[in-house]
Length: 231
Image 1 (tube, rainbow, N blue to C red):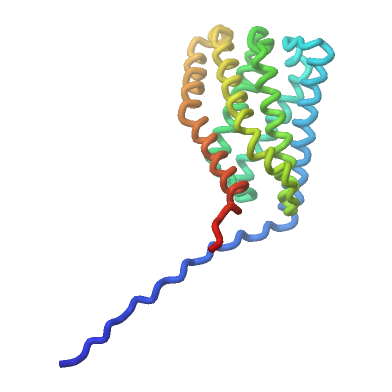
Image 2: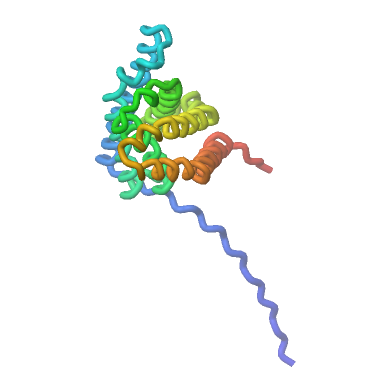
């Protein structure tokens, strides 16, 4: 009888993750300039917000009149982030980026700028929303700008992946309140437009938790990635 030799299956070596391709220099320079300009723009909006509240002794009804144009411009520039994600300039998920940018555009352009309802833009939630947006973006854009050239600032990284726990819920809830507040004024423009507002409000139910959980995962990856056991 022929002896059968047992063949041992050689264990497959885990494939190493492919390193990301280095971005061309012109892409790095473009993204650096974009992020720094956005950082400066949102910083200016935050400065105007704080200056208005100080000068008027906390009269939040005056805030939108003093930041209207600046807020509209910096938020318009954020639409480029969708393009950056689509063409691969940044690794951000296209869907998540689009959801976040769309919700802000809807509030800043349609609910505030187009509707132009005093009851809405004189609400205290306008100041809360702009403060949450501005602080988030000032930190985020500065973090991205430095990260392009692999400059790591531990405190900035911690702020970037910690402050969102409060800023994201404050921003999103303020957006929802402003959308709901503007519905009567929007109904005077067109009787069917309130249905669009209701649809946008409903979209926060699935999309906000998704965005929030995405940030929590990112935080664990960035701040908790080094806590691996070495035996």
